[in-house]
Image (cartoon, rainbow, N blue to C red; front, side, top):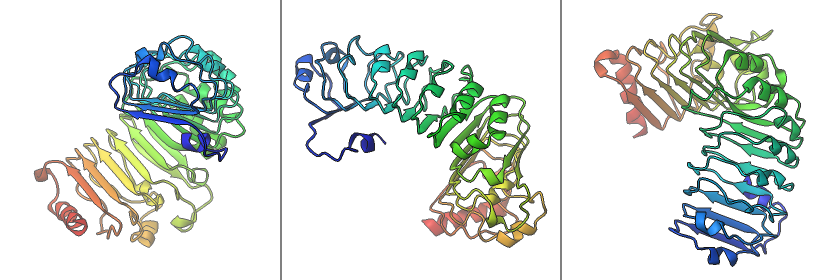
Length: 379
């Protein structure tokens, strides 16, 4: 995305500076870059050098990744008048976003992935040309002020996945979802939801169901049943359910459709991650014919992956050869009661990687033999 935005003009004469693994960048070196149009610094110590930075009047793309910086010096962005791409990702010590960034009127791409920024400034709404906002893994982020997202009329992509951080629940997810419903050009949303109201908002909004491509539901205390409307979820590519201790069932609402499985299903769903969800029945995966990666772990009560369909076994029987037909990776961790994947042997024609972590004495011999055959076939 960043490369596409920065090269969109098609010009090839841009001056670019790329540095990696530099222990210390001195201020006098940075002064030499004042005519640069693209600057990329990875894994470098840049704090001192940035403190005396020159005016980057021509800079269009700035990438500062994997550094040790905790903040950016005052005035650093003051003269970046034409910058379109700003990538500050993977700066694990970065805790504050300078307000000057909110004055970069030409900015179209902002990546704050894997930082520790605690609050998005309300002035972010001034970035009316912003097309892509990435906040994945921003572990410190607890506040997104209201009426910020809705003031970004050109936003096309919003990413805010917080995998493995179930303590991040303080931001108003329902409010953020409501604001995203109003954006005309928004077509890709990746988001983590931590509460029942947030999940319910998603499940009752046709607009959100069409736009959310990657969905992570973590914790969600009190959530017992998730009913996914099959006809409106064909854009979903990734689904993750993590530590939903109260979740008993994922139910597929097929509406008026009662025909062949392939007539209406999760054609784009390629990755499913199930972590620490008790009593979870995964038979709904028969509606994901394009699934490539399945990771199930810490679901200690689970005995089988595919059981009986809620409408009986007839549809499963019709399609049994297509179940997991495109599966490339199968990871099964800490499932001590797992006895089978499905009551019949499946061919797994696309399988290339199998990972299983459990005590063999707790697993049915036929299932172990099946796994060994799968591993032998791809070895």
